[in-house]
View 1 (cartoon, rainbow, N blue to C red):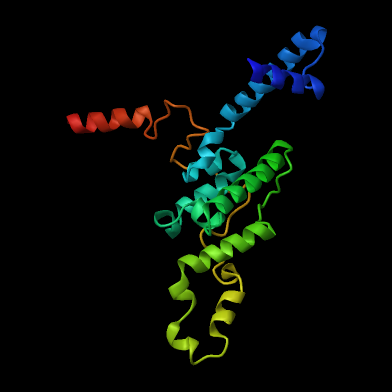
View 2 (spheres, rainbow, N blue to C red; view 1 turned 180 degrees about the vertical axis):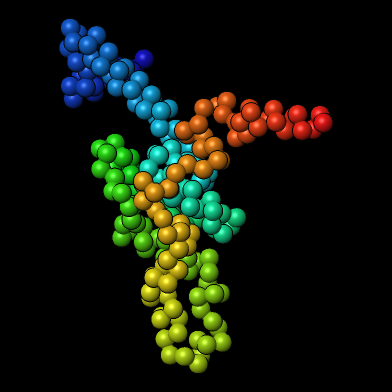
Length: 211
């Protein structure tokens, strides 16, 4: 009880507890803010961003072109969004970058300020380039040439990889208006009872089997 009294005294000392007549209003206000915060977290499916699931990136529908072009690329089988777009030097840096980049993306999306063609910012460019080199180290630098050609490694890693590999992994088409949805359901947008095969086709297939 003594600890609670000391805590209460501190709260009153720094005016963190409102006067008695304002307490009901303050309780309602704090509860409303807390409830709206929980609702926002639920609506945005915030917990999914802690995972490496690529479909978490399309919770925000403006990233659908990036997701669809990735699913049609060779990288689909070997690398997910986080493998390329977040740093991998340590866990703290990884989630700090995810949080700061995600906050920027959510702000732009909420303000409806996203451009038609989404481009990586400077910080993201550095991370993507480092991850390209990290995964393709053997292809980027040739051990046999490092002793024979001056500045071989520097010349191979100083340029951005996509100066040459322009269509990896998102292809030529990246604008919001030029790439539609694909047949694979995107969980964030599709109703839970959505089925890829339409009912009429199921019936036709069933009739064909019965013949």
